[in-house]
Image (cartoon, rainbow, N blue to C red; front, side, top):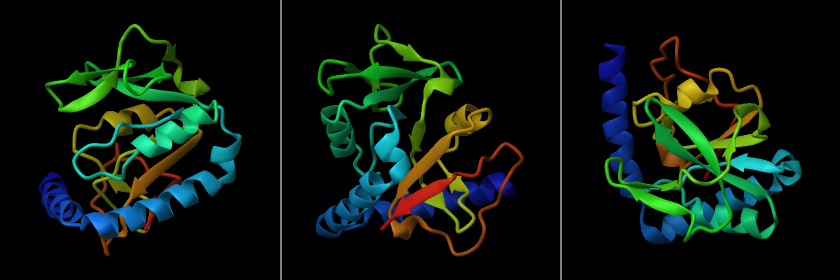
Length: 183
């Protein structure tokens, strides 16, 4: 029942997220960016892992550009089996390749791999979230597995429309996020 409930919430929130108008999306993303860059932990972090946004997610490209311009080390995930591995990028054009299977951009495997404990902050994608800071992703568990033994800052980026009013159905492998920035 929990899995079916999660799938229904995902379906609903993906539609809601896709239906945010471009002008409203732009306003909300500006507020999210401002909160993100005003966060004192972000300001002092040297190694930030972040996802490449897809499917109407909060746009992370501008965040990555600003981090790279500030000489912050930026790492993107690459799917390796059932796990995420994070590789350092320095150029959003030449350092990425398109993964046809998942429909997303990943860092090239020839780039520098970072160990989990060297990541100061990880920014995670969100499909839905609740007021207890539990999140739903796309259902494959990649980020929950990565976060299981990660003890530093995890930040989620979302639109307030992705908030559910009741607690999400939680399973033992679901990981609570320390901070969710939404607008």
